[in-house]
Amino acid sequence: MNTFFDIITAKYVNLISYRKSGKPVSTPVLIIQNNNYGIIRTFSSSGKAKRIKNNSEVKLSPCNITGRILGNEINAIARILDSSNIELMRKIEELFKNKYKWYKIDILIFSISRMLQYWINSIFNKRENNKIIFIEIKKKDVK
Image (cartoon, rainbow, N blue to C red; front, side):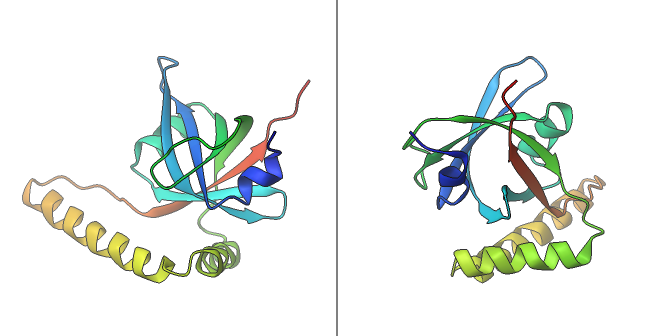
């Protein structure tokens, strides 16, 4: 049986967040450990970010890069971190760089896709502020 610590120190985790209808949506994500919390990264306009804004309850389980579940799931609470805390954002970036050696290449790909998205949106006069955000995940207290 996996503990919360085992899951947030795994290389990949399956994040289950919930639509307004209550339907679960699974997404394999990268995760880092920061103290007793797990942190994932995504775009501000992503489905998981929107779902978490609406419902902070999530489930986590270890998985492989393709999302195949490798252990049990644990209930957790997610919240979007305040990006104005520059010191915390830099610390999180460093933790991702240290855990995932190819992270710099990943950031480059994220940046290129962001530029392409901006260019496509400008053609259709659609303005979206789509930035990279971090989501903190903590173990849900059992009552």
